[in-house]
Image (cartoon, rainbow, N blue to C red; front, side, top):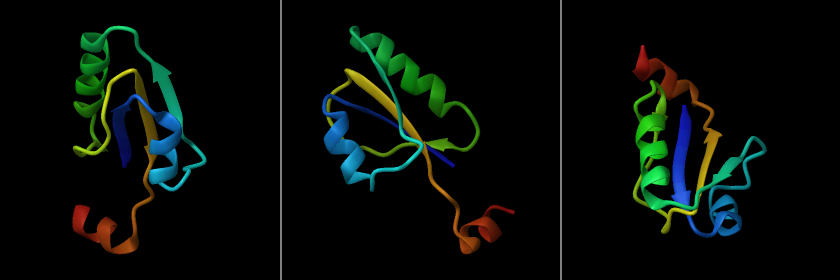
Amino acid sequence: MKYIGLTDDPETRKKAHGNPSDWWQQSFSIENEARQWKKNMLAKPGHFSDTGGEGWHYGYTYIIPLLHENRKNLC
């Protein structure tokens, strides 16, 4: 599963998410472009988000490994 988010403070958000080693981020200068990027990413299978974080100047992603129990529930 891939987590998708927007923030104005990527360093703090990365720490809050446990400093994932595959953290990827992209900067935006227009809010509508950032919101559309997130919407497009969330339309892909296996991508999700929550309401945490504030802002929109940076979009970020990282992979969340599935636990064995979660894998069974997805089958």
